[in-house]
Image (cartoon, rainbow, N blue to C red; front, side, top):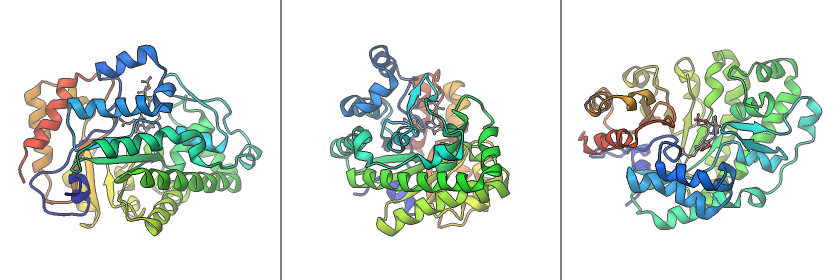
Length: 340
Ligand code: CP3
C-alpha cells in the first residue's frame, strides 16, 4: 500500500486524514535535547546515523504518518559556497552584500556537502513501514534569500526587499542560482527515496501580493515545474502568513498547499480548487492547552472541512520548542481516531 499521505494528496477516499507535524524532530523531545548536550546542530545534520536517529525520535513516540528528514533549509546553500552556522537560528558567515557576491556563487554537486541528507532519506525509506511517507524538503529561493542577504538575525528582512527592488538584475541572478541548486538538491532527495517534498517559503508572507508575484512565486514555479517534468513526486508548498497570497500560491504548481493558523481551513478551502490538496493548520500554541482542549480544537478543525479527501492534518507552523510532548501526542492521536 502507498503511504497514507501520498494517497491523501492523490485525493483517494480514506478513512481518516494523515497527520504529521512541521518541526516534529527537535527540542520539545527530551531524547533530542540529550543528543544536543553532546553534539551541535550541524553535527547532528551532517551525520547520517545521528540525523536518522533524530528523524526517528518522533516516529517512535508520536507515530505520525510521515517522517521528515532531519536537516535545515540553509544546509544546501553550502553547495553554492555559502558558509553557515546555527545558534540556534541560522547565521550566515559570508552574507550577500553586493551584486558581485552573487556573481561569485557557483554550484557544486549537492552530494559533496549534503550526502548525510540523502543517506538519511534512504535509511528512513528502508526502515519505515510502507504506509509511512518519507518527506524531503527545501527552502524556497525567496526565504533562502532572506537569510543569505539579511543573515537571518532580524525579523522583517528589509535588506532583502530593498536589495530586490534596487538590484533586480542581481536579485534575479541569485534566484536563478537558488532555483538550479534547489532542483539538484530535491531531485537527489527523490532519488534517495523521498515520497513527497515540502518547499518552505516561510518568509514570503511578509510580501505584498504584487511583490510575492514578482520576487517569490516565479522561482518556486520554476522549481516545481522542473521536478514535475522529471518525476511525479508530490510537492507541498508552505508559506507562513499566507492568507493574502492563497490565490497566487494556487499558481505555483504544487499538489498541496500548507497554510498557517491565522485563517480557518474552512475559509481557505473555498479559495483553492478541489484538485489542490490542503495541509494545516492548528495553531502551535494550542498545544500548550489542556488535553481536552487540544482534542476539541483538533476535532473542530477536522470536522470544519467540506472536503472529505485531499487533506493532511498538521500545525500551522512548526511545533514550539517548549511544547509538552504528551500534548503533541494528543494532537496526533486525535487525528488518528477521527473518522470521515
Ligand atoms: O522535524 C523537522 O521538521 C525537520 C527539521 C527542520 C529543521 N528546520 C530543524 C531545525 C526543518 C524542516 C527546518 C526548516 C526550517 N529551518 C525553516 C522552515 C520551517 C519553518 O519553521 O518555517 C526555517 C525558516 C529554518 C531556519 C531555521 N533553522 C530557524 C529559524 C532556526 C531557529 C529555530 C528556533 O526555533 O530557534 C533553525 C535551527 C533549527 N532547525 C533547529 C532545528 C531543530 C534548532 C536548532 C537547535 O536544536 O539548536
